[in-house]
Image (cartoon, rainbow, N blue to C red; front, side, top):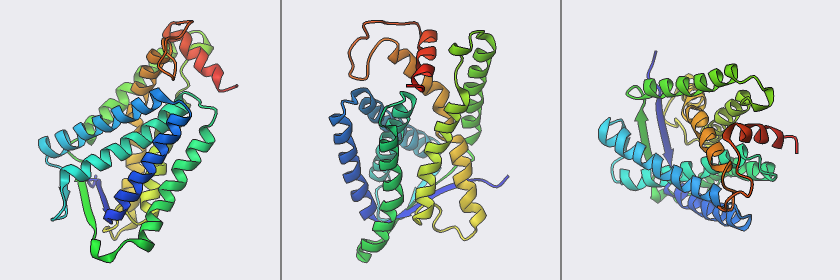
Length: 259
């Protein structure tokens, strides 16, 4: 199987516009008192930086960037942008936020619009940043984590006799795949993802494999963390007056989709 290469080519203007969006998004989350959601996004950004720079670059040497640009600072931006935006969205989705449609539309429209804005208004003298990573060194480990996570949920559902306390696995799959797919599609349509690849097959392969694997592998673990937290605390970081068992929290979360 041909190795998947994840590559982005973009103007520095893309970074500045995206950072401005993240600030607006953060302010909106604060306005709506989504305090735990914000903390999850910040934590995800830090974890992504540790993985991307510490493991992918320093340990596995899979990262490269065009000369004249700082790999550390570009990766810090990319990790915080991806980690914060995608994982706040995942947390809002898992918690079945009442404004999920509005949050989703805001994020998806931005992912589509930002590259097109940059194409029209980026100063030519700013040049472009080309950054890429090979995946052969770690996609196998990601696949193992993906299988272990979903296999554990499936085994739990086999064991659980109460239908109301079973985990909605198709729903988690939809979140894990579609969140990454929305991001990948925005980058591809905007000419950022795999811009230097001539073959449409190579472009689509990166989008499809990443969508199925890279965010989706974490969904079982994120959901368990969400259950552990939300069974004891609220979104506003206060203790629940009615602390419940994690299994009962699954049933409660399943009922929330009907509200």
